[in-house]
Image 1 (cartoon, rainbow, N blue to C red):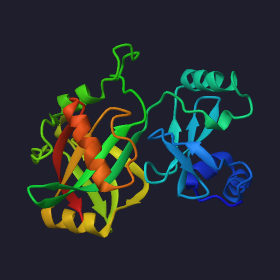
Image 2 (image 1 turned 60 degrees about the vertical axis):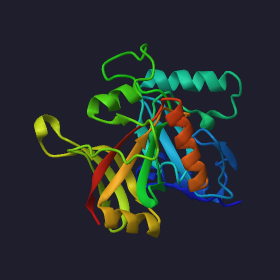
Image 3 (image 1 turned 90 degrees about the vertical axis):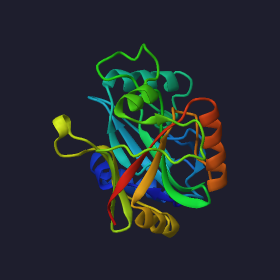
Image 4 (image 1 turned 120 degrees about the horizontal axis):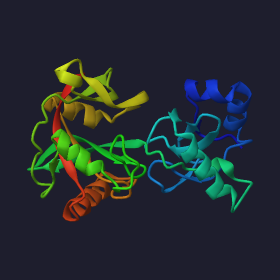
Length: 260
């Protein structure tokens, strides 16, 4: 049965046209899967699904994600991490190597509207798929995602009823009504570089786009892996943000809008 799969040009180039076509008609794609971004169940027969190819030096593993979590893309992964993930899965079930989720974390972004003081604000919620290690370390210090963002100028969220402060030098790139990137200052104050970049531009709702164009500012919330999850409605997303804030697991910043 045909699947609702998104296969990016980069993924197609890696796996070949024949394999990509087999996936699209359902020959080699699962119906149900665990999203490699938010780790919740998905169904490629019922909802748009991204193919995500994790590539090491010698090994490549195909995983699946909700298209609303992350776009179809190729992710470079250390070979030892990928081999370890393959061994952990195939030791229990040698028939399902495609369900492997390697330890390399990917940033997932969800857009939504947040109500603060009776005004709707456009927001992005950032949550990685796994623990984030400090660059140059072996990861033994645990998840450093929030600490790294605090060092960049993000602030802890104590109350969701308060608008975050502007983080100067960062911005949200919106072009032709689609989300392209979150930009951070370049080294030494140079040209901004992408902190997060969509492989393919992400659609946002008309309401989100209207609110962003009105305020020219986007609120960015970030939480460690497993804190928010993929929420199907904005009220549930708000509840998840409230819980993460209460647990001390939420940071935020307001960023100016670049583009329209």
